[in-house]
Image 1 (cartoon, helix red, strand yellow):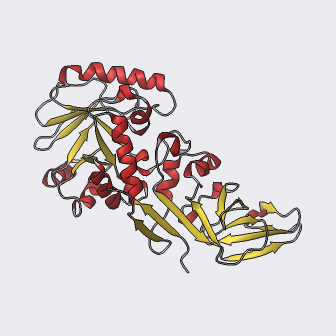
Image 2: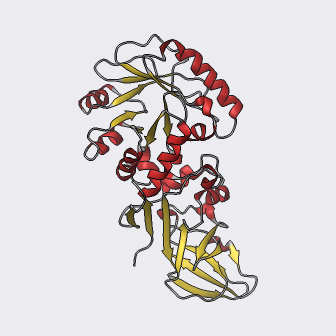
Image 3: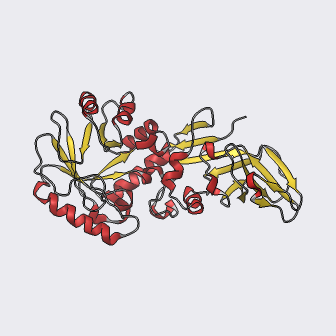
Length: 343
């Protein structure tokens, strides 16, 4: 049997990119497809994003960029993470663009100078005079999803630093949260990751910002049993039945990306919301049932109204982390790409 099935809706990707283009109000949308497209499949997502109007792909490493080149040979691709001399030579041959966070721009390759305006991570403290090969100036927002006031401070710092160069270089600052709700952060381009996948950068329902989730994850009941009062399920006896209780066993666990700290979250079983109980193990989880249900009853872990944002709140994390941890390798799950949306 298939342990689970992961469905990727490329129509939703295109919808989300168009929504971001509307929000960007004339600025370019650059689709961030690092970490295998946040676990959604970088090559497929990149193609849909470009079709919908994204002009540039952004990744974290040269290796990620090279993996896209077989399919997206002509796509403008930006590597945002640090690179060494060997990687820079490869990047030049592959016609990639690099982010430079230490001010030392290599020759023979287009680069984007990164200014640290408040993230306290990658970037120079003061913007040097841009030399030859520089095509972009950028920074990164630390609190666009949580503290708009500090995001405005960063925006002001960035705006002041790039003001002398606005007519010469592409200036880009905004991420998904900023593109959707902070129009003053939008310069010449917005770099959007999580919103491309229909995930909320604010941890709320994506529909509030006009986004459609791209990923759905489904399985089925592999076993159904009734616990007597005082009996338990799973390691550590974390769930002990206080009365006769039906439970279903789903063949998905933390090795598949359904984390151990998701005990207590809700999933759909036969179309009804039901609570995950007991300790989630490597290859299985238990769910409390209202009654005996047939083996093979459909289970939705993500999708059909079950949001990654809900699971993230239970696990005290963010939807980004949950999405990137879903294990879509063929030995664990079947991956299906659908493409029914408008082009």
